[in-house]
Image (cartoon, rainbow, N blue to C red; front, side, top):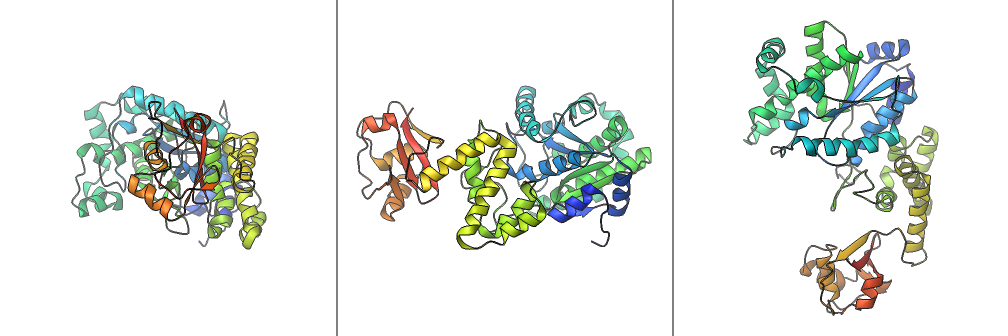
Length: 413
């Protein structure tokens, strides 16, 4: 990157590791210096909550606002009805209006933790406002004529699907035109000059810039963040149990805290810079720690990230629970509960209970776990998969520890 940013926002993006690509870094830097600038990131309402994979871009919006600019969160009430095909091997399931609105409501509660909404501040918009009422023939004539099918087929997100001979519906093929049209509408309605997103959105963002220039002769910009993987190659926010959700209704604050506490040593410094607001020098200092000291840095990371999302009290409770579970062998009041069906027969074995509660996938896995010495019940090693569980203890709750890091309470529903 030859241009050294002078604006506060781009300086932070560069210094902390958020910046992958920008369509015209020098010109955007000048616009930000003259500021304030309005920017948006779009989010399709495909789930009831955002997840950790969204958190890097949410932090970008937060920094954008903290440096005196106006962020827009664009909810895809319209585009969710189509579904973004980018780098997917199959078509997304289509949702009805009620499900989409319910998802938008859930996502909005997460955004409110990071952004200050209100007149002259951040705004939450819904692209259904302009997409739902489009006249198809007029849209084809006025907007569709600016898109080359040859160019659309060349984008990696489409090309990868076709190269694998996987079906790409005409409905999905329209998605990039609709996303480009969003940028045009936001520029007209709100003076929005910048679209941000993950680097997988580069093609969609460039389409919007090109369309806005062709139709209104307006200069707008695109900026992307890197697609993060952990140092061991996993996609950020994905685990064996699925997505790491940002809503407390879908993932407890304790489990969220534990996700960050379990960060691998090599990722600590990078994650501190991306997901907290600690000074860069402090992030780098903690990331360079070794041995037992790096665990203190991981605890700091977990506390800082959890405080931003769930509040300082939730972070403190999670840390206290972790200390009780790991250091003192206690039950841990914040542990997630794994439920056994209420009609579970008396004398259920530990192996059966693990399967019925969903703690393991199969009886074979339960037996292997026990044979390898990886299971403890109330801090006592389990050696027999046929061990019967005490019904009274199940009413109260039995602390199940799988390995050193996974701890849950097993209880009757």
